[in-house]
Length: 462
Length: 178
Image 1 (tube, rainbow over the protein chains, first blue to last red):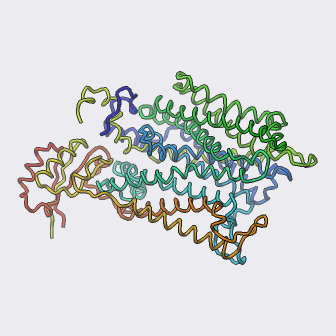
Image 2: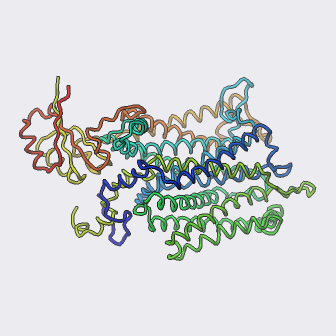
Image 3: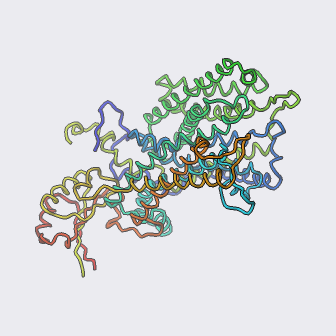
C-alpha cells in the first residue's frame, strides 16, 4: 500500500469497502436501465441512422453531394476527421501517460475516457474512407501485392503515414482497453445470476481467474503498453498535422503544426471527457469516485493545453508577418479579416480566452461551469480545423479561382450522424461495460480513500 | 492419483500478505493466490518470478522494425523507385526521413499486439475459457490462498491447519481432486 500526503484530497469519497466498489460499478449494469437511458439511446440511434443513411446516399451518388468545389477540395470531411481524431487523444493519454507518471486519479476515468477514444477514432476513420467515394476499394491504402504491376502505395506520403498511424493507434488502444477490461468482466461474470448474462460475460472475461502470476503479468503488460502508447499518442496527431504541414499551401506550410496539433488534440479530448463524465457520474451515481478533484485536475490539463494552443495561434500569426512571405501573411490576414472572420474569432474566443478562466479556482471546481466550457472548447476546436482547412484554400493564387464553401445538407447530416453514432456506442458501453476500472480502483482505496485517510491509523503503520 | 487442496480465504490483502509471510517462514509451500486486484509485494513471498514479457515485447518490436524496413526498402527502392519531383529513391538511407513514421508505427503495432497475444496465451485467458477461480468472491473482495498437500509432504495436515488457524482466515475449504 502506498501512502500519500494527508493534505492531498482523497480520491474516493465516503466509507467504501472493496465490496462497495464492486457494488457501485456493477449495479447499473445488473439493474434495469433507467427510462432516461432508453430516451437518450433512441435519440442517438435515430441521429446515427440518419448519418448512416446519408453516407449510403453519398456512396451511391458520389462525393459531389458535398459542398466541395474546384478550389475547396477539402472541407467538412477533413475537418470532422481531424476533430474526431483530436477527441480520441484524451483516453490513451489518460491511461498511458498518467500511468507512467503514476497519477492515481486516472483510475476513475481511464476506462470511459478510453472507450470514448476508441469510438471517436472509429468516427474519425469513417471520413477518409468515405472521402474515397468508393468505400469498397478502401483496402487499396494497404501495401498488398496486386495485379496492377509494380503498384505500391507511396510510403513517402503523409497520407499513408496517417493510415498506419490511425490504424495502429486504434488497434493498440483497443487492446490496452480490453486487457484492462478482462478482470472487471470476470467480476461481473462471477456476480451474474441470469444465464445469458453469465454466458456473455464468461466469454468476454476470457476465463480470468486472478492468479498472482497473472496479476504479475498484467501489471507489466499494462506498463509496457503504456510505454508504447505514450509516444504513439504524440505521433498520431503529429502525423495528422503532416497532412497539412508537408504541403505548400500558405497557412498549412508550418513547422509549428505537430506540437500545436498534439496540444489541441489533448485540449479537445479532455473537453469531451468532461462533457461525458459530468453527465455519467450523475446518471450512474459515481459521484464518490469521480468528484470535484478529478474535474479540477482535468481542468488544469485543459488550461495548460489551451494555453499552448493559444501561444501557437499567436506564434503562427507573428511568423506569417515576420517571414516576409506575402502569401503566408495574406493567408493569416484573410483568416482574421476575410469572409471567414466569424469562424476565426469563434475559434479565438473558444480556445484562447475560455481556458484562461480556469486559473480561477472557484470556476475550475464548478461542475456546471466546467460542463459549459467543455462544450465551448469542443465547438472551438471544430472551428480551429475549419479555419485551418477551409480559409487556407478558399483564396487561390488566381483571384478568378477564389471561392467560398457552403456545406450541403449531406455535409451536415454526415457530421451530425457521426455524433449520433458516437453517443450510441458510448451509451451501449455505459449500459453493458464496467465504466470504472473497478479492480484498479480497489488498489488505491486504502491509500487514497477518504475513510482510510481520515482514520487515526493511516499515518502510523506500514 | 487424488490430491488434497486447502483453500484459505481472507478478507483483506494485507492480512493475506502477512499470513503468507508467516506460513512460508514455517516451510509451507503456497501454490497460488487468487485476488480481485494485484497485491503488491506478494510475488517474492510466494515465489512468483518476475515475468519476461517485457523482453518478448522488445523482440516483437524489433521484428516489426525489421519487417517495415525490408518492406519499404523493397517497395520504394528495389521494385519501383518512385520519382517525386525528379528525385527517385535510389537508396534507402538518403530517403530514410520519409520512412521513419511508418517504421515507428509498425514497431509499436507489432510490439503491442505480439505482447498482448503472448500474454493471453500464457495466462490461458482466451475467449470461451472456463473460469477457474475457487470461489466467485475472489473477483470481488476476497483473497484466497491455495495450498496443495502434494507440495507440502513434510508437513502433516494437522500442523498445516494449526498454522493456518493462527493467521486468522475467514473461511477454510478442503477439496480432493483427482
